[in-house]
Length: 195
Ligand SMILES: [Zn+2]
Image (cartoon, rainbow, N blue to C red; front, side, top):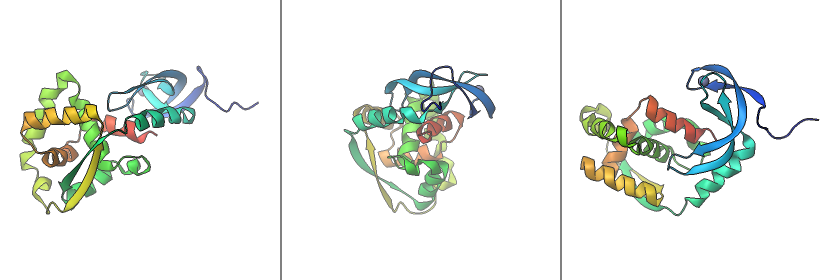
């Protein structure tokens, strides 16, 4: 009889982002970390057999992620202004996010904030954000795109901290977040686009 759900020990094949290769993987229940810091317990995840990284999320668990995100919906809102090129870049970076409840710009902002949440990385990344000054894209176009951004209380607090530390407005911070592209940030972006 065909099993309809994944069970611990079941095997699969995934593209492991960590190994950058197709790998055999094993399903098991594990904690899944949302980028706002929420831990979702007992999510069915495929772990790469080579490096152990979480490399796949089972359909059967997607309701858990959805519920956890739903719970975080009591969110603040703000409107930021962007230029068309920056908006285009954000959408291009996370084109898969269209299917999620978040906009591409929200995905990137939360991904950058997720990196900044790690105390040993914060200083380095705040400096990176501050020194984006010369990026051409930051100055091209007019800031004609008005975009609502939603976030929960934890994120609001963090955003407040980092904008204060960098002396940037929320909009300016978001614009720079869109330009901040490296493996660490992209890793977080991917976790948003898994489901
Ligand atoms: Zn791997």
